[in-house]
Amino acid sequence: MRVLAIVPAYNEEECLANTVRELTQACPDVDYLVINDGSSDATPRICDELALSHIDLPVNCGLTSAVRAGMKYATRHGYDAAVQIDSDGQHIPTYIPTMAKTMRDEGADIVIASRSLAGGGAVGARGAGARLITAIIRRTCGATITDPTSGMRMYNRAMVEELARGFDLAPEPDTIALLIRRGAKVIEVPAEMRERQGGTSYLHFMSSISYMARTCLSILLFQWFR
Image (cartoon, rainbow, N blue to C red; front, side):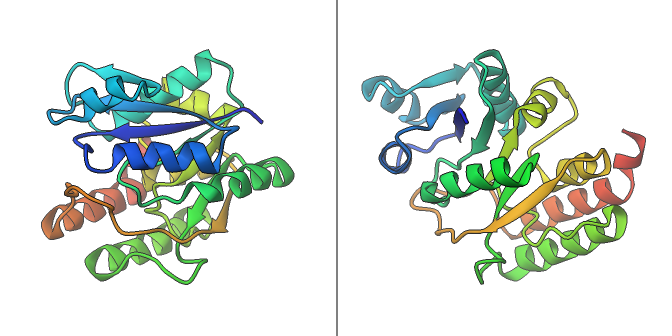
């Protein structure tokens, strides 16, 4: 399988170089593409000085647009699968071969790295929200996703093409629920994750609550009209 690691990066000057270094050392057979999402810090300079494989978005477009840009690249260059890797160092790239093997052997459309299956998971408000999303997906789709908010997901070619052209598809739990309803086979593999290795997350308590509320509402209501 030809796998592309999509690495969205917005103001990740503290983490990006180490993230890409770890990725290339752990998975030398996996190509990568950094999506510089209109960063205002040293992220663009790091990409240029280290000659990282990257594209620059002219302004900050958000995670959805950054990932979609990566999916379009994967589609146009004939990759068999694409995996999203956060640029903040939370995701451990040594799990990528396991995800690819699971996709190939089990015929999965989407493989999710699950903290819950590894005995971890989000805590506090985010943890409670994740458990609620798991319950809603089970109720509406008949599938159990133990770590619906995990950002480390691998998509096969068909799913990559869906995400590349679907203007209303985001790398979020409600899209996973929608794709399950459309027949996608989703498998989770146990995976540990780290805390952010530097910089500041855009998510705080109130934004986490808002994110969880929007996601739950989308799964319960809006996805039935898509």
